[in-house]
Each structure stands twice: as structure tokens, then as C-alpha cells.
Length: 265
Image (cartoon, rainbow, N blue to C red; front, side):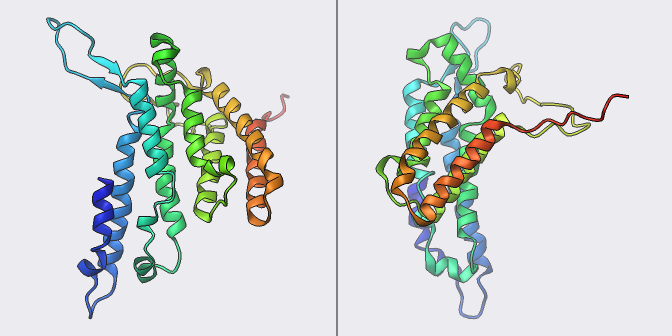
């Protein structure tokens, strides 16, 4: 799917630009290309913490649901690190972008990346991974902490090779920290909203009672240490970005202040 998108990008201008017309068709088709890129990679993200299902009836032996293998889940994350979380340069064609908008490519791309990232570390997915680790054992399962470590290595590659962090990656890294923060500092339920919903697939454990909170806190603390270690090598916007990430992590780990409510008479 990604290979087809890369090939299609070469034809966008010829297919949409006409001498006496504007660039509305080009903008529409380009937007669909970005959307399809996101969709293709979201399918890959669903392998993480997923299960294969085969319809069975009472006379047929064997399980109906089988967790996706540890190796296949890790392969999915490796693919996402390469195809989703690295900046998709094939979508950033200046001859297209400057025809449809003066600015906006950073938001367009990193919003799509954030959507894929959110799918990969979705709470329901993490809760399943925790349960699978218990039932299958550590050797045969893919743990939450291992997932976080693998995704972090893709989103924060520059911390390991001490390379320049470009503007797209800086935006993605901020989104990553904010996403992790939202897991341990969730918005309060909306009044009259009916509480936490759960889709199909069986009873859903409250995230606050799951392994998500301790895993995220441990993960953010480790990420903070990694950032702290490379700040002395940075300067300019790179240093400002890294210091800002540390501030965001610190605020996330402090937690949201809970109002004490009105005084009791």
C-alpha cells in the first residue's frame, strides 16, 4: 500500500492541474493521499495487542481467539517506526504543497502520525497486552513496557545517535509526551456522559486499575533521563526543545491538581 502511494504521488500534478482551473482537485487528492497513508499504517498498528479470530461452533475444537504472536507484534512496531514515525518525505513535495497552501504541512503530517501513534498505544490495547502477558507468560508475550521502549526508539531516534531533530520530529515528540501525559492525567468524565465506555470484546478494566499508570510513569521517567543525558550536547532550538520535553514530562508526572471542592459548612 505504501509503495503504491509513493508511485501515485508522481502523477498528482499531471492528473489534476489544468491550465484554466485552480488547484482544488490537487488539494483534495493530496489530502486523500495523506489520509490513505494514515489508514494503511493504522491497519498495522492494530496488530499490537491484537488477536486472530476464527469463527467456531460447539462441535469444533480449539480456541476462537488467539493472541497475535510476540514476533509479529514487534515486526509491526518496527514497520511503524520506519514508515509512520520517520517523517514521510515522499508526501512533502514542494511543487504540490506550494500550490495548495502557504503553510500547514507540519500539522497535516504530524496529526496523521499522532493518530497512528494513538492507535498503537490505545488503552484498550495496552490492557489486553497486560492480560496476555499474564496468560501466555513473559517469553511468549509482548509487554507494555517493551512496546513503549520500541516505540520510543522510533520516535526519539535522535537521542541515541545524537543527531539533529527537525521541525517535524520535534512536533511528533511533543505529541508523544502529551499522549503519554493524557494516559496518567485523563480528562474528567463529562457530566452526564455515562462514564467510561468500552466497545465490544468483553468487560473493560478501568485504566486507572490497570498496568497502564505504572508503566507510563516508569517510561516517562526513563525518557526524561535519556533527554537529560543529551542536553549538554545540544544548542539553539534543539536544546530548547529538549528542555521543553523535560518540563512537559515533569508536569505529567506531577499529575493534575484535583480541586478540593467547596468548603463544608
